[in-house]
Length: 147
Length: 147
Length: 147
Length: 147
Image 1: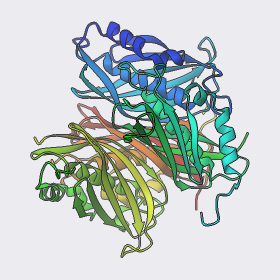
Image 2: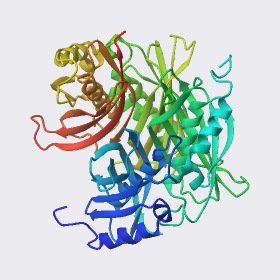
Image 3: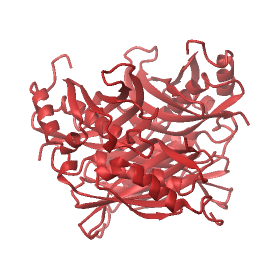
Image 4: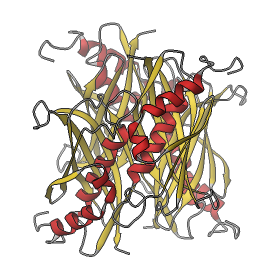
């Protein structure tokens, strides 16, 4: 990446695409950092998003981690490309008891077609205090000319 | 399972627990079949649950598949136990263009502490016609005395 | 697959490629069934292939399952293509105490570039009796013109 | 870990157990660093361990990564415990063209029963020069009183 990302306009592309993900809005998720190879997405605890014991549902953590991996890949894609998750695996390390969650996605290896990405999901208090790793994801993302 | 599931009341336990998953309600997901070692959860396409191209977000498919795996494990757990996903992997085989999705979870191997489960997610028309496999999950679930 | 696999000569291609995998020979693994979308690889217990308790090392089960997934994908690839595993996940359901192991790979979805495959690994007695599922794999395979 | 690992004798335990893994010897793999929560295992390219194109078989990388994750978990286990992989996922980021490979395992979260571990596998020249990430694993390990 000595020469910078292939699309200098990557941040606008990522923010526009994120703005079209209605599911992120339904989760109350917000797009935080967008840097070459790195994207952070945050979501807060909500009583509408719980599993049976009142913790955040694993599906919510997974959804923001999946989007963080996909958008981390998109920051390094050529202009006019779109990304799609091929598969991912998530390990749930602690119950999601926190008030706020951030998924930090990063590219491990960007290929022409496939990108390997990872995301760590941290839980914390409302203002980010007491951050603790709650989940970690490995993902494969495919990049293609946008339809 | 010649002797039947360890908790004869498994269906009530699963339905009660599912009823407490507020996230499933937020997704409009419904609990369909509940049988020993098998649970089906359905969800319909909604414009609130999309990714950037207007298909259902992978996180939604993943969430119902995760719950289907967890509850398939719970059907075989002893009375007074609860389940929690340790990890899962999902392969996304086709874009989620369908109108209706069902996640069919099944237990592969029920151990004392850990249960291996799998779920296939099928997309179809509104009434279940034209069913096609869109995703498949492998999951590890831990079973513990309920807190 | 109504029209048959894209390479009618798939079995020869798979058997030749398997014959070049020196690691399969080192494991004493043999290629059994080769059918469109399905490949079976077998290996026997050996004292050279164990983990610390004298069971077959998980890496051995994984290696034959990985090759079974890759070759299942290769049976459906066009002439002149080669396959490579992008990633896989394996769940180890039981200790590998058996004498003989067969990995049965099958294609879940064959795309132009990526193929999703799965393999179940069964353990049994020397002659295949008392077969029991010991591991299950989900894999993503990429197909490309051979180098 | 302010108080140090629960078994002060962890290094001896790990080295003894590794010494009993005949499969590691068959692969020519060696146990390098053993520290609390961290284990490194190395293996060299060999013509006996290849896939169809003459690169190291993914199963070899996976096997040393699996052992590195398991032994990283064992460094933090109580005296008299043994570990077993429950499952793992590996992403293969580059063809394994290198001459030497090291799998660096580390514990992400050590629980009473389950430990989440990760391993990165690097390829390099014979003397470790030109190191490059070729694969990355996420693993779940179970710890139990030794049989």
